[in-house]
Amino acid sequence: MLLTKITQQIGGSITLDFCWKAYKVYLASIYYLWKNVGWMMINRKWIPLSTGVEGLGLEGISFHWYTVAVLGFLFGLTLLGFTGVHFYYIINNTTSIEYVANRPIYVRADFDKSGSNYEIIQIDPKTNVYGQGIYKNWCSVMGSNLFICLLPYVDFFAAKKHTLKKNYPYNTDFRNHILQDAMLQRDSMLK
Image 1 (tube, helix red, strand yellow):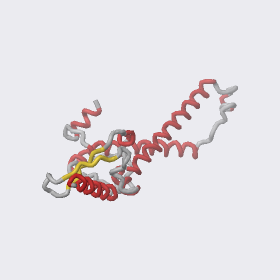
Image 2 (cartoon, helix red, strand yellow):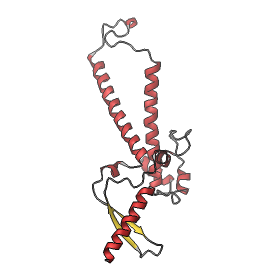
Image 3 (tube, one colour):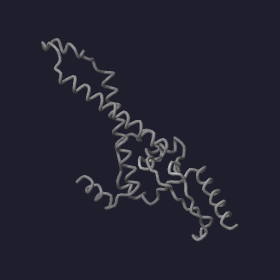
Image 4 (cartoon, rainbow, N blue to C red):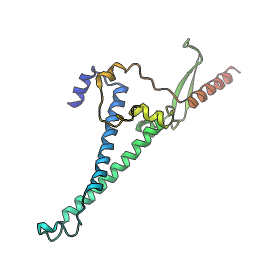
């Protein structure tokens, strides 16, 4: 239901730019969850688990509270793992699908703009083709404005206008390596 409303708002198509904006909202919500947990830990007066609240006349705490505390700790530990993995994905400019990929990637290297002078190069699936450095990777996912990069705000109408203008370039070292491999492949075929 929510997805159909969103697709109607953005014009009926889910684009790569829309997915990046949704990813930003997801990461911002994880950030605010951990920020709130941190503030609760700093500003809260903790009650010892074995005695309970003395003013209420409780003899101790029920077994159920221990279960809830353990499950809450396990959930927080799992969420910490997800946060760490997604932070790793952002600074390396990869997605979870690219990270677990095991098929080779084929890249077309054009030597000129004619469209008929090219070579197809096979590369290892673990090669990071879009890595631009930590700061540029962060900006491509979260935005360059440090004051609003973690706010869960997406302007769907602005995203729709700029969808076709968005470009995800290869990193420079990878591009140079592919062009060099394409030249070697071309030379070996001509001999």
